[in-house]
Image (cartoon, rainbow, N blue to C red; front, side, top):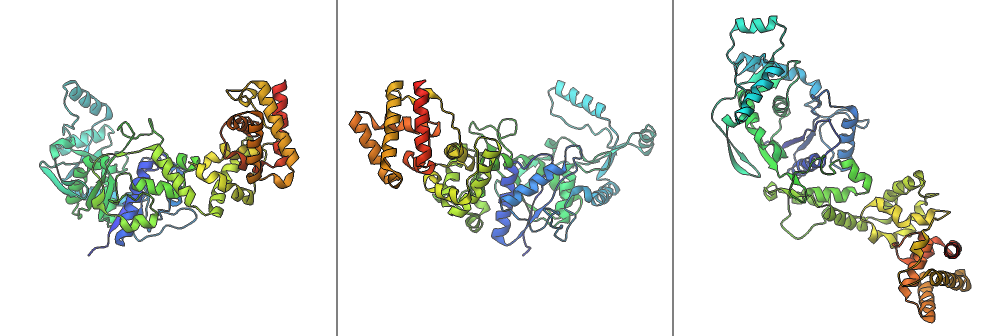
Length: 495
C-alpha cells in the first residue's frame, strides 16, 4: 500500500489566511492519522504579489500552530528538508518547461498569441450576448506561417492546453461521485504565461505528480478546478490523486468569509490572545466532527480521531463567540507558569503603550491568576482586567464614582468611611476574608446597599465599573495604595 503524501501549498501573496490554516490542519491531521507525510510547498509564481514578508508570516504561523511539516522549504534557520525539492515553485521552472514541451510535442497544447486586448474584446462580446466566458480557440489551429507572422510582430505566446470534450468523473472523499462536463470549463486553458511562468493549474499538477502527492485535500472553492487538473494529469501520464474538498468557511450570515468582510489573518487572532490550542481545536471543528458531544480536543486527540468520512459537505459557520468560549476553556486548562508566560508579552505591551507604568514580574502574574483566569476570553484582555494595578496616577471619571441611587455627597461619605475601616483594621486584616464582612458591616450600619458602596470603591481603586472580584483586587493593589486611591477619589467628589 502506498504511503499517503499530502501537501499544503500556500501562495505568499498575503498573510496566513484562516482558511489556509484550516486546510493545512486537515492535511496534517490526515497525514499523522494514517502515518503519512505532510509537505509544505510555496506557490510563489505570482511574482508581482509574492513577498518574503508574507512567506515568513505563513511559515511562522504554521509553525506556531504546531503544524510541523515533514518536507518543505528552508525556514527559521533550518535547511530545506525532503527528497522532492526544491519546495518553492520559482525554483522548479525547468520542470514546468519540460512538461509543457511534452504537451506541445503531443499536440495536447499549442502556442497562443492572443493579446490581452483581444481577449478582453472577446470576453466583452460574450458578456453582451449574456454568454459565459469562454476562449474561442482562435489560436488552436494556426498554421506555421500564421505563427511565424505573429512571431515577426514581436508577440510572445502563452501556452494553452487543449480541453478535450466529455464528462470528467471522479470520486471525492467528501462529496462522493462528481461529474463535470468539460464544456463548462471555459475552453482551452492557459498553462504557461508568455514570460514562461506557469499558471496555478499547471504548476500544481506538475508539482503534485513530481512530489508523489496521493491525496489532495483542499477547499471547496477548488472543486471547479479539479476537472482541469485531472485532464492535465492524464495528458501528462501522471497518476491522478484522490481528492477531498473541504466545506467553505462562512460568516454567521452564511456569506463567504473573506478579508474584505471578515478578520481572516491568523496573525490578528494571535495578536488578540487566542491560544494555539484553542485555534487548532476550533479550526478542526470547522467542517469536521467527532460524532460526539466532546468539543475540547488537543492536537493529539484530533490526530487520533480524524476521519475524512466525518467531514461535512455544507458550509462551516465561523462563530466568533464560540471561538472565544473555546479559548476561555483552554486558558483555564493551562498550567500557572505556562499561562503567566503567555500573558507576559501582553502586559509588556500595555507598558510599552504607556497604559501602565510597569510590567509585573512572572511571580506577580501567577499570584493574579486565581482572580482572572475565569475572566479571560483572550489573553489581550489582561490589560483591561488588571492594568489599574500597575498605574501610579490613576485617572478616574468623577461621574462614575456616584452610583445611580446615590448623590456625590453620599458617594464621598462612603469612600471616606471605607477608607477609615481599612485604616483602622491594619495590615494584618487587609485580606479577602476580613475585608468583605467589614465593608458589608459598614454598609449595613449606614443603611446603604452594599452594591452601591462596592461600586463606588471599585471605581475609586480601578477607574472602571467592571473589574476582577473587588476584594481580591483591593488585596492585589495593597492596603496603602487602596487607601490612597479612596482618598483621592473622595477629594475628586469634593471639588
